[in-house]
Amino acid sequence: MSTLDTARQLPPPVVPGGSRPASRFSGKWWIYAILLLGLVAMIGPFLWMLVGSLKTQRELLQVPPTWVPENPTTSNYSRLFDRLDFPRYFWNSTLIAVMITLSNLLFCSMMGYALAKLRFVGRDKLFLLVLGTMLVPGSVTLVPLFVLMSKLGLVDNIFAVILPAAAGPVGVFLMRQFMLSIPDELLEAGRVDGASEFFLFRKVVLPLSAPALAALAILTFLPAWNSLLWPLVVLTSEENFTLPVALAIFARGQFAADYGLLMAGAVVLVVPVILLFLLLQRYFVQSQTMSGIKG
Amino acid sequence: MSEGAVRADQVVPSRTTWSRVRPHVTGWVFALPFVLIFAVFLAIPIVASFVLSFTSFGIANIQDWFSAELIGIDNYTQLFDDEKFLKAARNTAVFVLFGVPLTIALGLAIAVGLNQALGRVVGLFRVGYYLPVVTSIVAIAVVWRYLLAPETGLINLTLDIVGIEGPNWLGQRSTALGSIIALGVWRNVGFDMVIFLAALQGINPTLYEAARVDGASAWHIFRRITVPLLRPAILFLTVITTAGYLQLFEEPFVMTGGGPLDSTLSVSMYVYQQGFSFLNLGYASAVAYALFVAIIVLAAIQFRLLRSDETQ
Image (cartoon, rainbow over all chains, first blue to last red; front, side, top):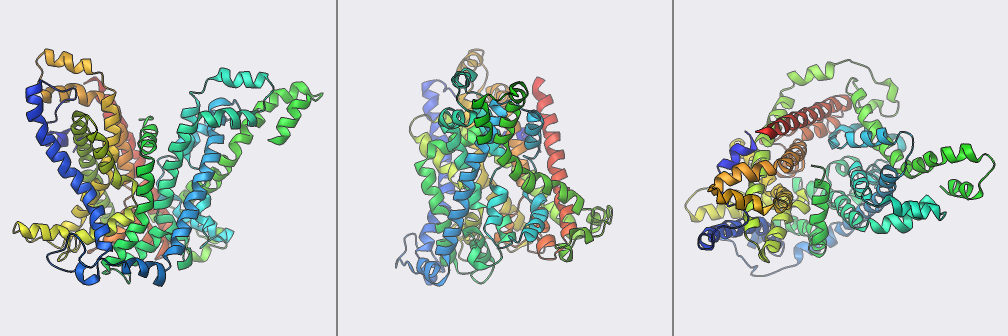
């Protein structure tokens, strides 16, 4: 089944640019209606999660359900924070995501600079090698990484999560493509004045790359904060869990039917990202289209 | 780095040799931190995984790597007799086959719709549709399991109102995988929309004007102008979405645990099970490599198909 075949089953799309004013209005109201319905389907589950997290277990099972909690309670949250170790998981997740983001910003921009603006032996082969790994699925490195971490004595240590993600090929690609657009004359002028490459990198290239760095920060923070598979494999004791690991394990295990607790856990996992998203919206969309330039 | 900088300033006697070598040294100094991490934690493990897939590597070999036995292609031949793997492969294929076209088609439809609805509301819609893309799949899967719960879930309660008795979506084989496909589309459609929206905004409006003057219908214009001009975006999204969907893991892991009766077991989940529940590390590597090959082959096919169509 190709994309085009499926597209045919959709309501006839209206071409951008607008047609005659009369047909424009009549053509538009149902587009708005469908888009609005879609919007409800997108945001609804998040609101339902929030509402559910404030309900008592009895109210959660009530039929018909209540749209606004009758007896709003924070007991689900207090169970997370007092009885379970969620402050700890939150801290682990934050530490891991922040460290991964910072190291990617530094190492990927250094590598990007080398690839875009410096000439050295093996540069082009190195770039191809990095590009070649971009489609490798995470499950391929799962086993060797685990074996390696056992050898290094890092199993059940949050550094086992940080190190492999400390510098990724996507970041290098993004930084290289962006830095290619920095004029060479600017750097040459600095070199003639006797500036070292390190100085140029810090004082000229990095400030000019601010938009790419913002995009890269978002592109690395999100997967670092949200990732499940590798942390699930390598973090074995509860005190080292990240939020997604803890939530996934609780949802499959002893709290499988405790929807109030699970909704509260989901809120704790999702709200920091949503807040960042709403604050930095412009950069989020930019980061996606920037990574999409290669298409 | 500091060494390079100091020497450069001093202009030492061996100037000619050094000035020839210096750029290479500087380049590698900048590349080094990345290259080290890349080599140790990505490039070498990719090769190691390939080697492991030809061994019977188990938990006993973890301390002494070379004590593992080479067993040739046994792991790979075993794949074809392993009904659980075949089931996982089939489920993953179904997920990709339905999920990818649905995600792209819906993303395109939403983007075209939003591109029409100019003005301030676009921002609000875009944020809304994009929200699931940035949030954790684990959280989303937990919430959707609650929405899809048989008796108390919002979806079945809504269906009740119209007089339909909703099924136990995640609890029966006929609907479990379909529910997970729906969740996948719901989560990823916003990403495709953003890419399409950016591409649509890059299309020259005079093209549409000209077509309209020539009396082309809206559908015709869409098929003959919009879609061909969006081909690079479609190719990019097809490759990216397929590679992502082939790695399906979190949704079934949280929502169904692969059940009922393995009807939602995915290949990535099977790697995890074989590797870290049964500790068949060699075999798990072979499963992972089979997945890797599938991703590469599909990406190559997609490139060929979508590129060669360009002249049409």
